Length: 278
Image (cartoon, rainbow, N blue to C red; front, side, top):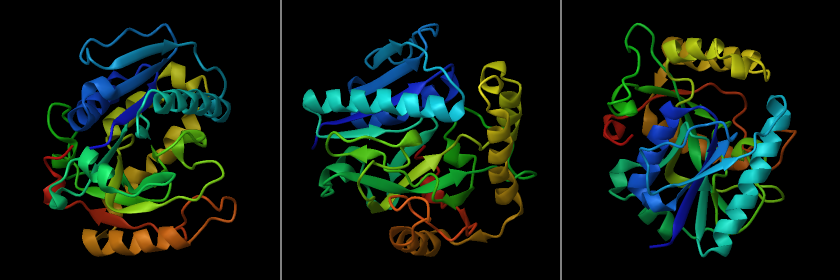
């Protein structure tokens, strides 16, 4: 089994950080988790005693500028982890969970250890939404995918989150600078950031986020809930197979090392086999 680390950077986001540390801790070992706190004014979490919690000076600026600053800090830390002997480094936002398909019967560490990764690897992005009128507010004490059953197949979250050597991530882990991406079969990156309308509405009232230009961004992301509510739910296995092929070959005109999907809005129904996973 390869030695694998996971790294994230957060600011005042206990809800998702608890899920992030629980998931990656169960898969990699809590002692292999590295949490960078964006701002030294944040409390040190006490629910993950073996994880490495590292307070950092606040990365200032509006959304785009701050994103670039944060990813530079994270890429530098990933390089340090490789120097410490790690063979793979996973970098994600705190609301993103990388997982292999449960049908394989393999955990994340085993799955990644068996992959021949030269530079980086991506999971197919699934932006999990809420079906309004059918699904209530999320209960953090229960598995997320037991409460949410629809997701948009997303190029935005088909991210190059796993590095096999020191490289530079682009903002938000969306690409690796100077390298193509590779989407692994049966590997998924679940994004949960906009999967609950009540939570989303609370974020609109977060003065810290609004002050750095997040209002427009948050309104845009609420489209995931609308599409998962109104859209036709396509069969999962056939749809993700086709999406993976298209993402591997299509490119947006502005970035050759990001996946494309011709602006298609495919909503899939998440199979029950994922219900106890996350």
